[in-house]
Image 1 (cartoon, protein in one colour):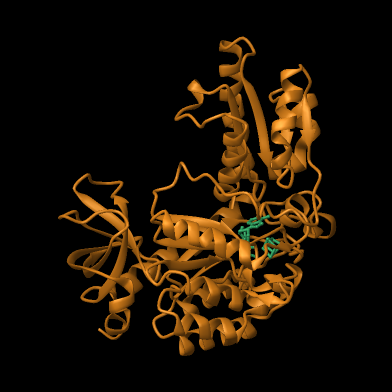
Image 2 (cartoon, rainbow, N blue to C red):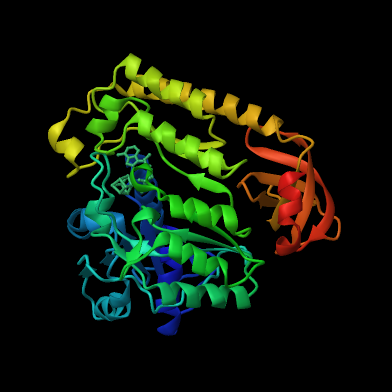
Length: 439
Ligand code: SAH
Ligand code: SF4
């Protein structure tokens, strides 16, 4: 989400006549786009700001530093008054105001805008994508969140949920297709609740899938409470909608889920997973899990491990609970699980997931996948990397293939994080998907 937001800011700055540079040392203005979701995300920002403070001193103050995003929303006073680290503080709904705020800074004032909006979606701003790989892109389809999960700061920092008009998403999609992008991930805190004047996410996804049959589409994130059947139909029927669903469970215990205000039970969640697997054979699933939420007992923690064994996720993002101010959990419950215990439970969760992912990846050996080449592998100059329809990272020898191409790869080896394979041929997505899914 922040990556996508930075591209909007990039667009706003480019219009003001300022171009992006490669490193902070070359910049006249530095913006740091921040995340408040967990304390360690915020710590990274503080460390980075300390480095920028040094740059500012070296440049004798002739460097403007701005904090954007969720931390700006949450900690505006601290940035400006206590720490005196930054010149500019801009919340996630105020990016349009940046040029004006910069002028204020140029006039020697500190500038702040952290007003949250009920309407802002930046629908008319075409993001300037200078830091991506030129093959895959993010498109925000909604902003904010109304769900109020008790652990989560997002509703406070990003405000009320609002959806972008269908047409503006389709226009951006067409542009990306013309520019040669081959994969788009539609973004929202809960894409299931996308609704613009009565048009829902299944409709939006269907319309997107019709624009370019060579363009893959992914989405993130779905909340288990309201995953619609119609959406699964679109996924099943449209070859370019990837068979991959990120569907965070957070905990495998009903009492904890209730305390988290997630509004589903373990049983309802498992039923949903079963339906997904029945309707989309071979669908790949990932989740988010929080270890050590308020009052979590050993037994409740074991319920989480148990649900992971039952579902067999392909991928998981796993976190220790981090208390956030203003949230319901902060007001109502005690953050009473010792750090050591949280860490140990998290380590158990991570270890189990590695075993599961390793096992699931080994089951891929000998199978074929259509992989969209994203670029040179991070590990080796002579190899390429890309992802399968099911969102698995696949690495293979370069040959004559290059970014933006679809290739059919036979999987020959794996780790718990990546698949390795051999390219058989270059393919068109629209021609081959049906025959390959059955292969
Ligand atoms: N909207 C998405 C989640 C966005 S935040 C959804 O509801 O699925 C991404 C993940 O961060 C969450 O799924 C949760 O697992 C984790 N997270 C959020 N707040 C947290 C906190 N206070 N402590 C630890 N992890 C947290
Ligand atoms: Fe946070 Fe819950 Fe909204 Fe996700 S759905 S952003 S976890 S409040």
